[in-house]
Length: 417
Image (cartoon, rainbow, N blue to C red; front, top):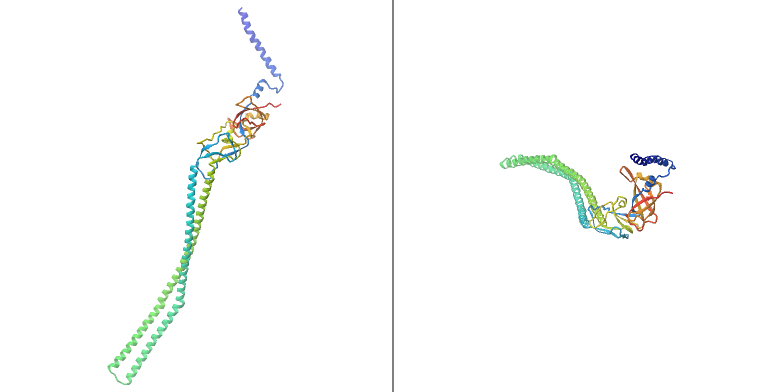
């Protein structure tokens, strides 16, 4: 009985061992390239996650020219709202920009007054420079005329006067000499001598001697005047003339330097004023950004285009939100222009290239199914986990009027016939 029980246990194991090689042999005899049960199941499991994204859209971004502050939202239209071109999508806090504009207006006013004052001061300085130049030229002319007058008239006049004085002096000597000789001859003729005659002769001799001494002094004085005083006067006038000429030349050069400095100051002042005016105009243009308006008709989407890709998260613009500058913050999409955005790894490209026909099923409704055509970019958009990531897009046949942008879907390649 124990032997019979052991045989009954071993029999099924032997039958199973014999059946295994037969099954393997049967698989080896299947036609070449025919999908096995396992490969058929793998093909059916190829699925990608996608997101409904706007195909045709216009981005809205803030590009301020001069404003360096922050953009805070006071009021914004809700995500998904239908808008018309020119509608206000978001109203932003304007307190900072208004203060900047007011300050810039004051700066422009002050700079304008300063520039006008500079122009008037420069005009006055130019008039004063002309007056000084005229005075200097008149002084030089007077110095030149004084020098020429002295040399051409005063010196000859002095010489003629001195010559005449010398002749008068010589005449007096001659007259007194004649008188003295006549007195001597007269007194000797009458052979009378008395005290009166001696006194007269003595006085005449004395007068003649004094006249000669006076004439000698006058002669020496004239010689001194000609050799010293006239020379000194001539040198003085020449020096004065040279000083006036040098002074005029320095004045002309200094006025030219001052004129160039004033012109440079005017240019810099005008440039400063123009820069402040330009800054004010830039702020005024930036002020228009605080009413964010729709660039076209369509559906308002919060966020940027890449937020409507797999892994993206669309932000919400609402009261208190701070908007970034120089980047897209809102989108206005054409309502019927929809594509399915998806990202494919390098290892998934083979399956994507086998067929361009795909089925799209919203995750919210597994039974719904849409047909589309897949296109994959040839250049990777990035990498992840050591694999390149390629952007793909599915164009839906007939669009997806009942689905909204941002809806997540499942994309399945259709088997090619």
